Image (cartoon, rainbow, N blue to C red; front, side):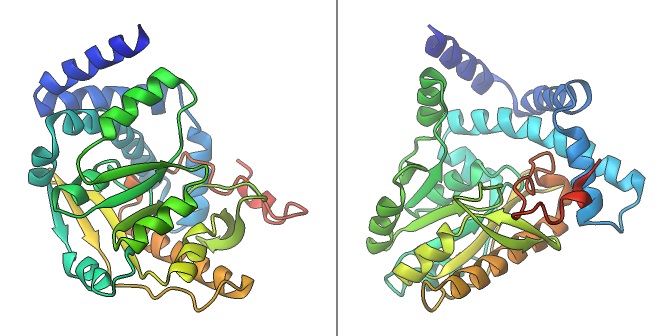
Length: 297
């Protein structure tokens, strides 16, 4: 029953003009950020600590815009997914395809380093729309009906979505087929899952999976971020190749992960209103709680 209702809602969204979709998204973002105030205090505290040179007015504008964009992103993703890859291709300008081609010429596949910047859900579709095969690691939604609907919504030719559980081996197989594998590493991890690497000047528990996979497969890393353009549409920017770590020693993995975090930090600084400041990125602290006081609100 739930699945039928959700599918009906998706069809309704797909039938709407895009400006109406954006209006609905802005309203959702307003409710999310101003009424429910989901992690709003955390968002302000993390932005203030990370980019202290911003004025109070600038921080408020960035946070309010962030919530608005998050609302738009969700409805917009539905609209584009239902409309198909042709609609996505028309909306997304891609800069730097040559870096992906250079990576694939090596025959070891390519690892796409990315983050929750802009409407990141459109990035896989834009990649597939331009003829590249891509595997992306995603978290499975606990509710089976909702998970099935979302999986179907994300499914497009050329895209494979892998559950975070036991995805490592499947990713290596995709790289051996000289395909692309996308990994988002800007979310907080538990101590058991992550390692501590600097992000905006503070240690953040980060997944070492990208560095491990690059070291084992010898696949080059290509940073890729998609941002919303002020005039409408999106720009997907692909950055020059990053070489994989020389080995899987703790020192090499840590150094690589620090470097990846710096790439993400630079991308966030370029468009701070498009990153998910409400996410508790620094929630997991090193043993003994070092740095904890800096996050009091």
